[in-house]
Image (cartoon, rainbow, N blue to C red):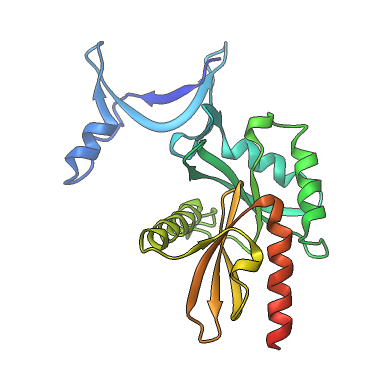
Length: 239
């Protein structure tokens, strides 16, 4: 009943990866019984009858505030909500939590992509998973990237979020001006675009009329609505 990595041995187990000795050593390990076991990287458990149940890939497991969150379980809960077509859950790097849970959701035709729908999803899944596993952010997508065999390519979503984090750090390191009040950076602005929402603060890039970035704007989520209102006002003024 205890969860752990599934390992196996037998005459049909591979002898190694071709010309990849480090990966072979990581996957095929000799244990104290003298036999070589293949470490699958899959998380699972065995019941009292000896049946083994697969939970998910260990690499996908999210650790947030010291708790283990299993994306597959959370995705099943989200997908069971009325109006949700399918979803993907990933862990985004977070300096305070280690990782924070983010869900990408594709809703069915005819259903809104608004805050009310997000609340509906959160209310639904809060009855099915622990509070620590609830996503800190839900992002709507028209569709999600998929592999050649039709599975959701969660690694692409991971890469997208990592690029946002890298961009944020690079701009700050380059000495971009930071402001923390909406009125400080509005004069001369022609556009503003959200760059990163990490659940606690929201970063925006402010653009001038020559389409050159002026500053990074950092707000707490409590002032997010103010910023979004300013964004709409700028768009309206430029039309």
